[in-house]
Image 1 (tube, rainbow, N blue to C red):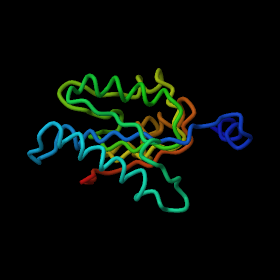
Image 2: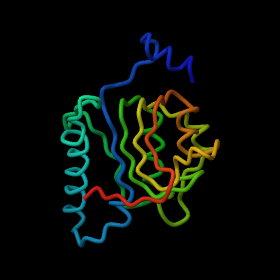
Image 3: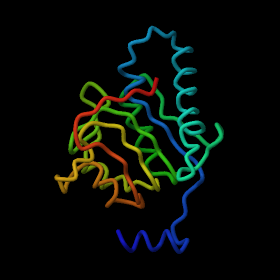
Amino acid sequence: YLNKNHDYRTDKIKFQQKMFYFGSVFINDNPFDYTPSEKINKYKEVANKMGTEATKDPVLPFYTPNQIDYVYNENVDEQKNQLIARLKQSYEFAYINIHGWEDNIWLGGNTSVDIKEIQTIQPQTLFINLASCKTGDFRNKNSFANELIFSGNTLAVGAYTQIMITSDN
């Protein structure tokens, strides 16, 4: 990790000034009765807000809508494929709102991503905000968040230790 951090600070590792947003909870558990076109438009509106208004903090970068990529599909297996593809690409920031546990994130049905898959994926995102229950349990050295940090080029992950409730709406 320290070598990776040094490589970043000496410009040997660079990240595209972009973010990606994956609101699995919005797609798969949204209680609102949107038409399909309303749902995708609302989803993009939420993602753009995450990238523009929510990151006006001087610590986090500011993104224009054309610098924001989305993971969106009604099919959870395709969502997983899109998420894995995004994790393999270079981004400064990712916001992922998804159900999770200590060693996996769950999209729905039998579809999840576990820590063994993260080892294979080798994430390339500088900072990942993982709004997900228990994925950041610091008492578990094999937590999902730890695997994100120690695989690939990710340098920081914000994640929860206990069960939490959050909404993108």
